[in-house]
Image 1: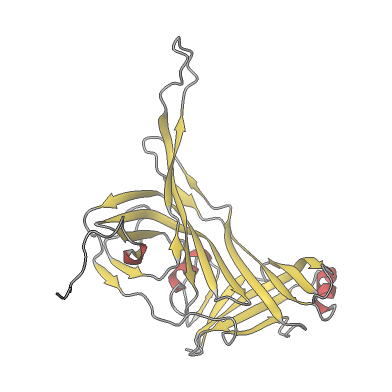
Image 2: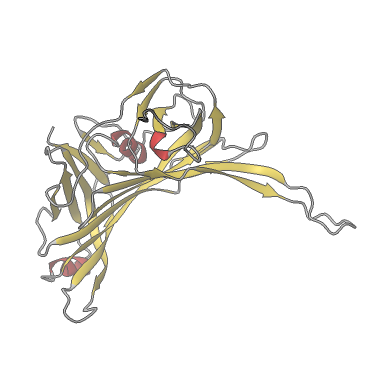
Length: 313
C-alpha cells in the first residue's frame, strides 16, 4: 500500500513563517490607512499593547484592593531585520523625518506615521499611529548586517477584514554581508589604521513621546522629538590617530559604506561627529588590543546631522 498526500491538524498553533507584515503611510494620525501597503522582510518582531491600570486607595471592611480602571493604553515594539538594499528606505525616512531626493536623505522635519498591518492566522493586527522612534544599524565581523526599528503606536486592534487597497510585494535585494559587503569606514575622509571589527549606528528621536487626554485611552498625538545620532566603532589599535582626535574634540564627517553582492547599498554619514569615551586596554595575554570609541553626532553649520546616500544604482 502506498501513502500520498499530507497530514492535517499537525500544527500546535499559527506558524511564524506564515506571518505577513506590511505598512502604509497614514493620511491622518491614528486613522488606519485603506490604501497601498508595502510588505516588508523581517527576522522578528515583538509588538505588544500595554494598559495602564489604576486603583483608588479606598478603605473598606473587606480588606481587599478596589476595582482597577484603565487610564491609558500604549502599543510599542521592535521590528528586526537583515539589511538589504531598498527594503527599509521608508522606515529610514520615518526616523529621519524626511524624504528621499535623488537617492539621498538628510534629517528633516517631515513627520510620518504608519499603519502596521500584520496577518496572523485568520485575521489581521492593525497598529495605527506607528511612529519610528529609533533605528539601529549594526555591522559586525562574523555576522550579516542587521537593522532594528522601534515603534510607538497609538493603538492596536484586530480586523477580520483586510483593510489594504493594494499590497506591494517585499523587495528582494540581497542581504549585506560584512566581508565583501563592508566597503569602508572613513573618519575625516581618511581610512583609519587597523581593521574595523564592529560599527553600530543609532538614530534616536530624542524627546519623542505620546500625549494623552480624557475620553479615550489611546494617544491624542505624538511629539516627534529631535534627531539624536550616535554610534560606536571598534577597531584594532595600531596608532594614536583616533585617540588624538578624541583629545582635540575634533568634529568632522564619519562615513560607513556597505553594499550587497550586486554593489547596491548605502553610505551612512555622520556629518559632524566627534569620537568619545575611548576604551583601549590590554585585557589579557596573547591578545590583539582593540580600541572602542563612541560616536557623538552633531549638526553641521547650517543644519544637518545625518545623511544616507544610495550607492550602486
